[in-house]
Image (tube, rainbow, N blue to C red; front, top):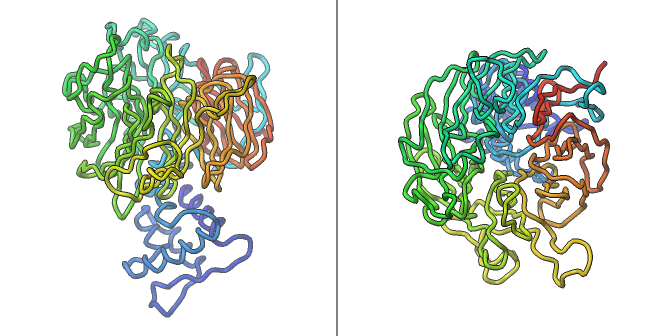
Length: 558
């Protein structure tokens, strides 16, 4: 099983190093240690992640605690989080699938949403997607005129969201439709499409031309996605036919601002979505009692629990995605609210466990909220604040924050300065951003601008892009700025880490490739056919880049 082999490599590379031999408490008795390699051999015979994990850690609670203590010590010595964090980051919440080669079967790869792929290697640094100047191109497929959702790779298929500007079916006329397309991963052959109408109403007028905005989430033979028309869809990966469709406007009176846009989170028997409830064009919240956050049975499409937080406090709309953390022994789904508050719910019951206001002084810092997705690394959460792109009333500055998830209840800070006395007991570990004081007469006047970019965090470094112009590398532990890079472009895509490189798509029709590290080192600036507004991904040692009009599979030619 390819995923097991990849995970084995990850464990061996992380724990064993170049030549060290570690001994673990053995399943043959507490005083009879076995080698890690022996457990790896047992794990390779596993047919599920549950069996795999039991082989690695032991089957009893005592053995598991011993393993976790050992693993914690090793990981902490490497500057990484405790063992439970590794579980979440590699996606152990999902059942093992024979065909799975990489863990990026959803936006952010795993429920933790960290834009980091530790499996795929030998990805191309130099490539070109300009017309008649192809370089390191495996295949290319045509899309519509606007493409934002995806790409997501799973089960030998690549799934993307686009519009209907270039209809593949003459029966589906008109570009203002949301289209989910599926291609064969190996050669780019078009497999099928699912087409959804966007209501001809003022509410959806601005978003109608943009098509399907959010990436789907894939589990086994099913995929889940949210249409701009406020529908949650479960469909077959084989032909795109819907198993069920939940119309949130009809069932729950959800009223989105321009559109719904959420990449679902799958955990256990549930699918979690942000509904998109928001204001109207007059600035009124039409349906404050309608749910903003929804947990749906993944088999039936029936709502299991819901929350109408933040109710009347939604600033504009809600277009971010939920993430999953394991804290204090509980699975906590973190919903980014349209009031700049993160809400942590117990996954099964919907009990509110934790919340944190990330913009406690809007009169000072402007009405920023979440478009970026929160990223969980261990018991820390990282997220940047901003507004929907090209906002007519843009804020002047914003922040990236690091939060501690281990608290309970309302752990909101009073200010954005973590060292302020009033923030004692809050979840705020650090923040980066705000205005530069005193205001410079020339040059930049803020430390960080608004963002819609989800961050990538790896080996103590955090990478994130502003909506306009600059790309940042911060110390993930302290928030200290390590370096910036000016791209002179807008950034709707998020940075993607793989193969010790960071790939950043830009609105200037390029993908900039950086070396991973504490110094700014640009490896390449690759020209593409049109703007890159979706986050790249990788699978099978192939890099997938979606521009507004094409899907590119890129590799190092042998």
